[in-house]
Amino acid sequence: MLCGSCQQNEATIHLTEIVNNQMVEVHLCETCAEEKGTEFKNHFNFGDLLSGLSDIGSLFGPEQKTDISCKTCHLTFEEFGKTGRLGCANCYQTLSKMLLPLVKRVQRATTHMGKRPSKVSAHVKQSVDLRSLQERLRKSIELEEFESAAKLRDEIRKLEEKQEKRKKEPKE
Image 1 (cartoon, helix red, strand yellow):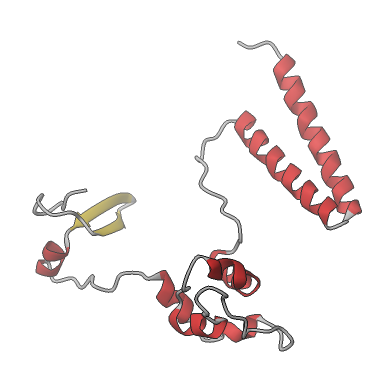
Image 2 (tube, rainbow, N blue to C red):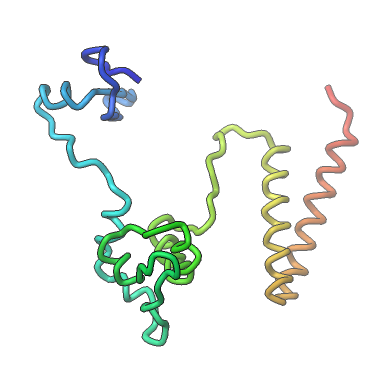
């Protein structure tokens, strides 16, 4: 996307402002942003955010080991806490037990939910809900939580019955 001011350079700064209930987007290159007197050099860095969590050790009980290191690059969780960056792809697996609570704290979930349009049809919403319930059922069975699995099974049946009824209804 080109800069909205000079129309020559690639826009690297994207601002969204709401003025009088109207959304205004501004896209500028760094040169034009500096000329306009705004300071935009502080880009958001996820690594800096993670390393800035000073109470990173409080996420774990005193009995949990945080001195585990990656077998490939030998990065420890303590080193990750200082830099906010992992050393290699294997760090994700090696340090996963310690990273998941941190990711959950930052993102509020450990699985990617994606975005859904605000106006999604009931049929699509039910399909997504059905897949989610089926995944939860699979996990409940895996964890041998049979009472919750039975409740999930019943919810799945209800949704499947609704879908069958919808299929049988005459279309306009």
